[in-house]
Length: 362
Image 1 (cartoon, rainbow, N blue to C red):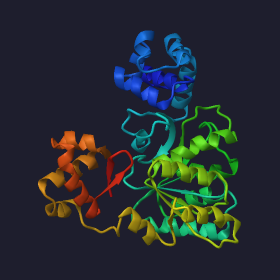
Image 2: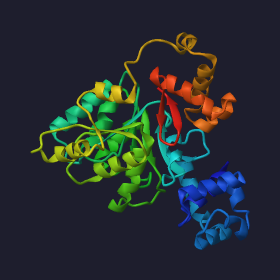
Image 3: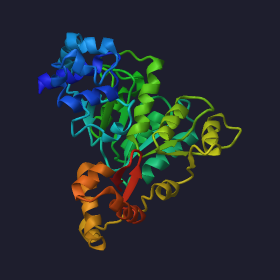
């Protein structure tokens, strides 16, 4: 295990070797360790960057990988590679999202329902109240709440999630050896028992603003729905919303008075058709087709489905998220014949299609 993990880290640390190339190499050769045994000619089939190829051949990042592995072992930090069951599978739909993450905490990163809540660092009292209302409304759905642990709306979202017993993840733009801002350290510690801290950056990575957009793309990619609570016309929240739009996520924005500075970004998202208007939790339930949760059990629900539909549901529940090709293989039915059943299951409110021809149970 240690040998494979250090090789996964070593791939992650090679400059010029992006997430999609890492996945292509490991998919081709089976393990990260096997990648480091290939020749330059074999590597060139998947990687065009000559410096990255040389770094693999030289194993120049192995020393850093060993140091980081030992640090993670000492501080109970999980090293999650994209091949691990615990890795957040929603990130795998996009070429630019990382294939290795560092995680501290206790929660399911592949929860059935994930909502990201973002907004200005200069949150108003009304913005904080909105965070409370949103968190309270999501209790019945047992959503995982994701945000960026920053001042303002982010920390309000985390605190409200904790108040209502919802798991909450803080995605940060630095290593696991620090918490930024330090004012949020006590909240971050509470999150470790029902949620946690997630980052793609190794220990020793300093907090610099240039890394925030990288953090934001994870906040956008991990969720099923993203809610912008308050935002000025420019800011990190709009960057996150843009990522979410690019990834095919459902984006929501809380409207406000045109004269309010931190309503202008939300109003702009709505006006430009980049976000649904969020006035109450029913807006989210309607757009997401979540409906009001009931006490109906899976066993009572399945008799209403035909055998093909039941097989589809079983496949998706096992995987958490499932590509249509994976459903086709598991059910032994061509994709052309799956379309009608998938549509019926969506109309029944049992599954939801997400970016990349993938489906999740709801």
